[in-house]
Image (cartoon, rainbow, N blue to C red; front, side, top):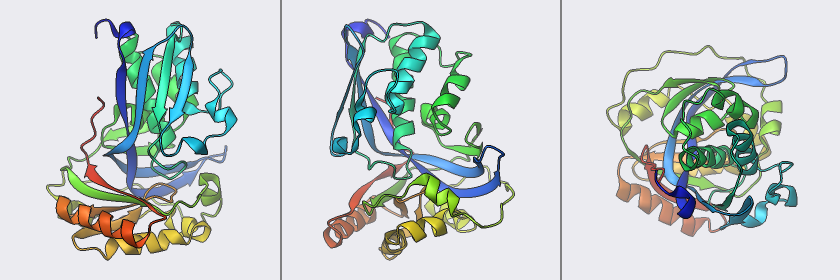
Length: 302
């Protein structure tokens, strides 16, 4: 990339969707190990990088008001993953953080679709371009591990099978582009509380097919899998149950399910028209919900 220091770089930070999520164990440090098939939607946040004399961080967009003062802090002590990612890469690459980062927050906060991790992964992606650093830099895996388990998959922004606490990434089976509806009941569903309520037996990882040729094949397979965090999430946010049923009742919906630890739910649809109609009708019937339609497996970084 040429002359990036005099230009503005815009990067898309897509919503991460856990198509299924199985809990496979619990480590001594309290973290749970998972087996999950992950894909990305063309619905997400936006990151803008531009030159500055000193590091600056701005948040705007529909969910900007949800950030605490410490999450808006641009110092190394910030609790915001975007800011932490900038400082971590600056130190590791020995580059001065002379950039202004603007985050347009379109995704609900703490909603089970990897928003913060996707934002951090997108900032890393952008700064690697900005500073001319290889995406195979040896220090990147350890750096991303300090930021969070979802950051590595969000850096690549490609479908993957996640195992361990998220650090083990295997290529996903080939999947087509699929119309999708995302909805969130705008109720907080803290991840730590969801995992604390998990009581079911741990599962063994199972084999995946090489490819899914269409949405029906994918939905049929996913119906043999589960989101193990669904029941505990419903205990905290009962509206999640209603959200899934609402999606499944719509014409063309092949599968309705909760993503991650909640409370965002997704519906896979047979056609774009049916997905758009479902999103329009659900928004009308539930004006207090966040509802978006788009495509799975069609995100673009720029």
